[in-house]
Figure 1 (cartoon, one colour):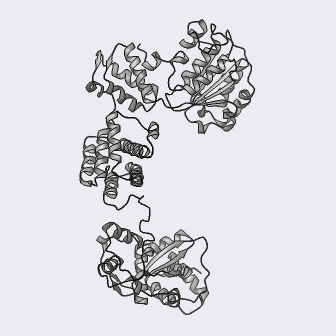
Figure 2 (cartoon, rainbow, N blue to C red; figure 1 turned 90 degrees about the vertical axis):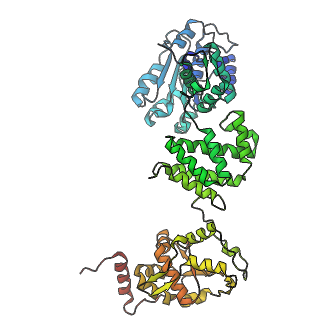
Figure 3 (cartoon, rainbow, N blue to C red; figure 1 turned 90 degrees about the horizontal axis):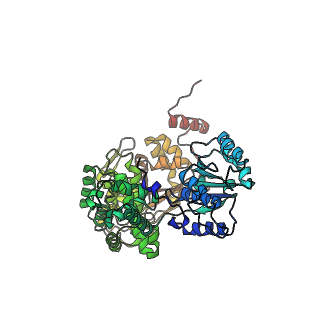
Length: 564
């Protein structure tokens, strides 16, 4: 049976271990000074060498030929060969994923640790994926880890350190493994190719390391698939049959279209990917990763080491493309694509979230999250007496959103049968005001006192339209009036605010206010911790018993009836 490359070329000495010098030097110093600890905790990403280092440490402490001032195992003595071949009785490897219970910990670890090694100096317990142990199993292990027998060494390995209890971490020497850098991975793959007597194109090695993302095991596994093609010289065309396509070139093409605001070509590219059967979720992940790389490189070239490394040509193309936009624009684009990636799983039309994201980026004045209120407070910044400038399509849409989500395509006359109101929508009024400089905002003179004086009249009109809405507004009166004709109403609970912000309710309220005060009025709702003091006299909407009126309000609000 053929042995996989990552097993065949597993490091057998500390000198062969790559990418973890900070750990290697510390362990070697401990071995040379005979100050090894009784418990170690190795954490880090997959394929970074945690289990390999644990085995090297086990070999070193039990090596028969290693001198007291040396750290490297000889890899030739009986003890080293037993550990190398996995037949040593004094090195116990346990998969915590399949031995999660407390009984397994007692039988395989605690009870076994009490007995002295059969033939070696130390009995070493390597517990892989230790975070999979149950809470009771961790508790059973605590005492043994704290005061183990002199002949026992525990090495815990995990990829999810946050799931390991702090009580366990505090009893171990912790070592954090890192992803292996691209140059070190390429150097190792070149060594394996030389040992296997294969000639491999350098671009293939770059593609492998890019896919592996710092994992030595992933890189060697994929490289083994490529070498299995059989030829002594592996070409790029042959390797593409094995290497999963990342479509980095197409990601760069899409980014350039977006930076140029060419939404048509960008959307066309997305639909071509769908036709070719490309996984859009993976494609979007690559897109977000490359945009992140552009941001970090723009901040500092030194940050590039924390990003995914590509070949020099692509690296330069990414850098050149990133110069076309500002940093805040890049962060906004990333936020939009992050939201789009979340929506891909549940989208009825697979590519629609990405298409919408492209439209938002290419046709927006700035790159904010979809939920941000882009126009909030803009009106207050305008000086009194100055005419409004004609709104752009994006600002008109934002104003429509602020006034209850009404878009320009929905502008039509509103006819309320209950009140008899027929007027233009707020979006139409805002557009007309913008087009007519003579109609100045500063001419709207409305005070909070005037609004409160006629608030009862407003409630009576609203009651004919929606009794429940009138009851809600009775408890939440206007708190301020802005110079641009915006009446602010404060709410303590979001439930009440949402009821008023309902498209039909808010539209009816604004029309009633405009009718009562003979001037265009808009409503803005706010959430506050405490409502302003209510100094207005609470009068019934209709004559009669006030208590009976409250009961009637509740019954009509919830569609109930009084039962004797």
